[in-house]
Each structure stands twice: as C-alpha cells, then as structure tokens.
Image (cartoon, rainbow over all chains, first blue to last red; front, side, top):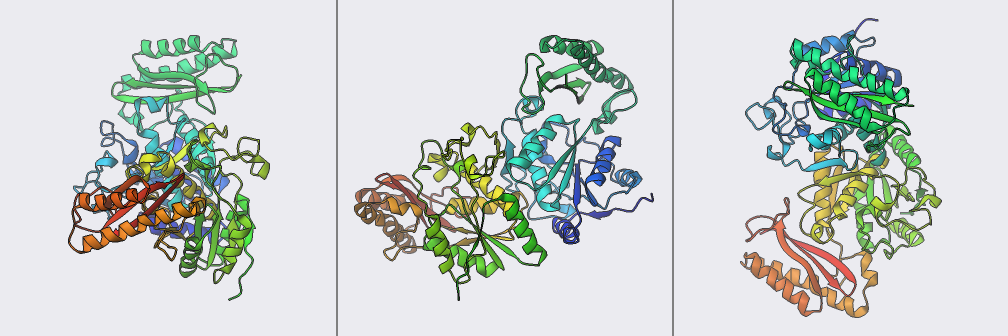
Length: 309
Length: 309
C-alpha cells in the first residue's frame, strides 16, 4: 500500500476544524497521542487505530505538564522528520500529524511563543506564567507505582490527554500497555468524565531480545542495554514461577528485584498489583500485572507483565 | 411566541445523539446547566442562551459531587414539573431538558440505580461505591471565597460541568455571575482544557427589593428574608463609597460586615478581590468584585457586586 503524506497541523483550531469536517462525513476518527521519537511500538498503535477508525491522527507533543523541573524534559529525544517517515511506512500511513508548539500558552500559539519566551520549552507549567491552573486528576490510580517517584506525572498526562481529546475530538484513542498505569488512568478518566471515546490498549512491543521498546532506550550505552534485558527476563521468570504455583507476591518480587539488581540495575519499584485497581496484592488470586521501574545509569525504564492464572 | 414542549432526555447516549444530530444540521447548541428549582435568574440564562445559539438544552441535575456529607444535598429543593412550566414560559422555550438520574453510577443509569442502592441520592461520591475518582481542579481559583468553607465544592462543579460538556457537546454555555467564583472557574477551565465552548456570564437577577435570586431563598422565613436584604443594601453602599473615593478595602469590608451583622446575619466571608484572579486586594486600583457569603438562620446566601472605578 502506498504511504501517503500526512497533513501536518500545528494550530488547535485548524485541527478541530479538520476533525469536525471528517465527522460530518461520517468518518470515525482515531487518535494516537505520542511524544514523538517514534519506534515500532508507536507504529503498532497506529495500525490498531486503523482497525478501529476511518482516519488516523497522530499527535506529537512533548508535554511539559508531565515533567517535573528535575526530570529529563530538555533531553527528551526528538526527530520530527524521522517520525514522519516512519508514520508513512505504516500500511495506510496516517492522515494528520498534530504537532502543536505549546498547549499551555494561551496568548501565543506560534513557535515564538514556546516556553518562557526564549525558545526553551518550559519544564514546569506552574512557573510558565501562562496562568494554566486546571488539572485532571484520577485520584486513586495516579498514586503508587510511577506516581510515587513522579508525583506530577499522571496529573500532567491526564490533563494533556483531556486537552488533546477536546482539540482532536476523536472517537477512538490508542494507548500502549507498556505504560500500564497510564493506560488504566486514561480508561478511568474517559469513563468518569463521560468522554465519548473508545480506549484501545495495545500489548507491549519488544525488541528481538525482549527489551520493551521505549524512546528512552536510545540513551542506553551498549553495556546498560545488555543489563536492561534483566527486566524482561526476570518478569518472564516470575510469570513462569506463578504458572508453576508460586502465588506469594513477596517471593516473586524478590526474584525480580534480585535478578535486576544483580545485573546492575537500580530498582525504583517492582510491584504486583490488581489489573484494574492497581492495588498491591499479597498473593495472586485474580488477574494481576507485575510492574517494574528500574534505573540503568541515568535512564529509567519501565516494563510490565500481565499474569492471568 | 408559543411555548414549545421540551424534549426530556434522561439517558447520556440519547442526549449526545441528539446534540450530534443538531450539529450535523449546522445548529449551534447552547447549554444552561442548573440544579433545578428554577427562578427568574435561570430563565434569564435561557434567554441569553437563545441569543448565542440555535437550540437550547437546560440540564437539571442536583450534583452530589459538589456537596459534602454535612451539606444540604438532601434538603435541596426540587420541583421538576414546575421547572418545565417555567421553561415553557421563556420566549422560544427550550429544546431539551437533560435530566439524568445519576451521573456517577456507571453500571446503572436507570432511576433504580440512583445513589447507594436504596433510592437515596448519595451525598459523598467517595462513599458511593461507583469507583468514580476523576476530578477536575482549577487549583488557584477554587481556593478562597466559597472554597474556604466548601472545600470540595468547586472540584465537584468543575467535574460535573466537564461531564455535561462531554455529554451535551455544546457550542455555548451560560452561567450566572451571581455565582461569580464558579463563573470564573468555568471560564478558566474551558480555556485550560481546550473545550471549544463559549462561556457567557449573565448579570445577577434580583427580586424587586434587591435580594439576589437563589433556589435557597425558599428556605428563608419572612423575618430572615427581610434581614437578608442587608447583603445587597450593604454592597450598594460599599460601591457608592468606592465611587466617592473610598478605595481602602478594609474600610469597605467593615461597612458591609457591620451592616449584615447588625441585621442579624452571620458573615462567612466578605472579600474584595480582583475580577480575574479572585485574589484579595488591599485597595481598589482596577476592576474588582465584592463577594459576600452570609448565613441567615440555616440558610447560607451569596451575592456580589462588581466595582469598576
């Protein structure tokens, strides 16, 4: 199938106008929100979007609202031209790439309006001077797991996704289950705020050696990358142990923590939680997911594995 | 103009379907959110909605999400049949009355699903067992004024209005400036979350003797009602003093507090704040609004007056 050239839209009003024109033609709109620097995992989300909609919008926007000032916003990788090429390689391509400059600056939507006036993207919305002060919080699900070490992260994710929903007005949206907590939060938010949007979750895409795909993998040295394989390996081992009857989460956690630590990783968390509530469980009695975050050098990686006994 | 019979819709999906059908015909949809027990103030919002849209939806829903368990949810007055008649008396009537049973029960949308299963509307969402946990917060504007004595109030308002926006999908919404803080919060929320909705603010409607119209006025005894006139009287006096050169807010506040207290009212707050930020000011240098909340017996009333020197 010939790849088509996507329309690149940077303006919010233009984006909404496009979507409304599509809707008035009876077309179902799919939205894949991304922060760019796309990999095969993102492209699998686009493929899923095609299955559930007639036209596909991919948003590329590194959301300052989900980074704390101490986090890696300024070093978050980007490659817009490369992203467009990759999107064109997906069967069916994409219809629109929505690439806004700054979704928190209400006075100035142009490129010059990015960040705090000197062309640098702001890393802390509160300090941006734009007066943005509305936040969507999914109060229980945002706590625990990544919420512990990244207290403003899910507040920022839920808020920017709400903004994107209100700008793109999609019928379907697609999220990767690699960001498991994020996926559950968006599902819950869509239900609780009565968005008329179907949320599709897509399985984790992995490299051939099992490493979960992530835009941050590019920051790993070859040595760190080799060590990082311990995450997926240990999760597979834990799943296998659970299938063999080990349902005590303390044992399974120790297995994973030891394996990653021995490989040279530094555990942020390794928790077995209920798939829906994301509450910790002591022993596996229903569908759970084993969620891990660990540092390899300066790179924090996350991964997870559902266990359905 | 002959009043038309409004279509009463209780189901979320049916409501959205109606709105989308209207939009596909090129019609602008106006939404007036209310908690029912309508008075002339509400009807003036409906008239404004007609000016800015082609079809008008009035929602009637007493939102448990904005009441704390100790507040007056269970005694909040209602008169659905009377409301319909009043709406029919407005020139042009209304097209739809959206009257959902319970916007926080995701399993059961029927009347039997109201509240916690025994037919009683829940007064605290957290205890409802529906798992609702997503809240929209306008973090600065929600503090101060009514936010001090009613800490969950604006969280509940912003959230239910977001839900109504997502269900009704209006182009225009109309709020009364009697609830000044609420109006500013909704304006800010619409901007910050990129809703494509125009927010119209309508001046306070007053009885002939100056009392601001409120559904809660029905709870006032004749004596309390007479005393409550001190709110508007004192605000008018303060405005007049300001026009005469008294720009020290402490003096103006004392004037109002004394007048209401002398009449037998109990002040909750009496503050002069910036019209946009709602931050307290010490002297009047720009557009401000004098906001008052006071108790008369068991009834808490609010009122306000803009001062533009």
